[in-house]
Length: 326
Image 1 (cartoon, rainbow, N blue to C red):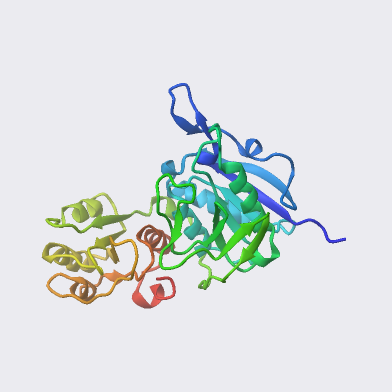
Image 2 (image 1 turned 30 degrees about the horizontal axis):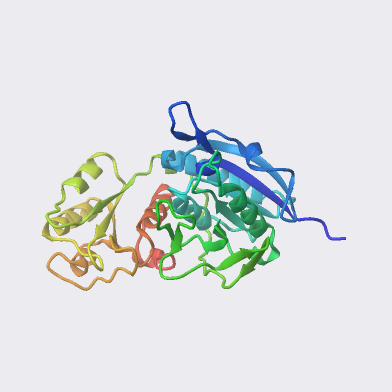
């Protein structure tokens, strides 16, 4: 008789673990043991533990590194077939992508959470967690890297963003759709994500590697970019207008920053579509000529994770290095 797959659930907090406090505000207060009913779910045996208990809007790079280390430890356990991470939806897209960047195992890692707190009249966390466990336990999930399972859909980490603040199914893959669904407790997959070779785990330097984002808008200048560098930023991403455009002030700053050894990435404030360095007069073509690195169609907050990880590892990002990711 074939043994039941074993899934490790790592709890980090988020709405799925939140209840109202004495001030009427919802805070992450429930642990891993409170999220699971029994030790077998969806045809898998399950063990759980707390990594932290925080709303994901409170997470910094140190916390993300600790989550990465916890997941890596579970994946290295020969008795574990898959890992589920419960996490707040606010910054789930960043954690999922960071985990995917370092994920070298064939075992699946699945993130999930909730849009309604645990003490809501109709909480969505329990159903989402059961579906995430089913996805992580499925042999069909092997080799697909890190995924997000939410409201019946399974998404690849890369390109997936929270696209609605309160909708029950808030995630959307930019330029694509779900790679699978969970139907009647069974994971079904439609496609396989293309993933580059895994990077190394974030080192302790990741905790203090600062990469900031500045947005181009009518009347914007280089003041915020300069302030970010003065605050210690190792890299800056320009959220350009349109296909990735700046202006004369941003261009002059970019030339200066690149010469000073600051990594400058070029993204777009537009939700979907790639950066296309096409325009002059301070546009994307001029910014790339000045040394800004075009970040393709990678969502801007995931691009920030990529640059921070590379910089923390002592690497100097360049177009060739970034090509497989963006």
